[in-house]
Amino acid sequence: MNEETLFRLPEAFSIDDLGIAINSEGQLYCHYEPIFKVLEFNGIHVRHLVNTPDFKFTFVTALIECYRSHLARGGEPNPILDNFGIKTLGERIANHLDQG
Image 1: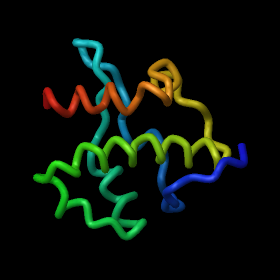
Image 2 (image 1 turned 30 degrees about the vertical axis):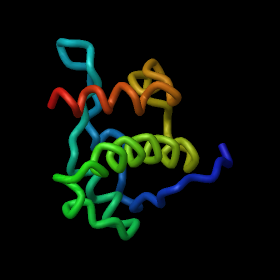
Image 3 (image 1 turned 120 degrees about the vertical axis):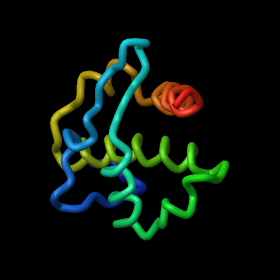
Image 4 (image 1 turned 90 degrees about the vertical axis):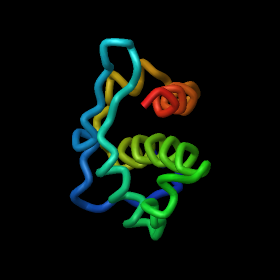
């Protein structure tokens, strides 16, 4: 895949670090810290955004872009993320963050 992505991933980044899973309510779950590290790697100081309205948008965009970047550099598809679909992923994560 030769798709342009918004974020560069640190060499040590693995999509598995995100701990992507579906919780008992059928919502997407993942660890925040690896996303924060990717954002910091790309010059975005996310800790300043955590308690702002921009946090949800930044987090959702980062998760989607981490996956796109992972695929673009030849990483294996993630069945959970693929089942959510890239087009609806942002909306579902936003709903999860609203409830978290």
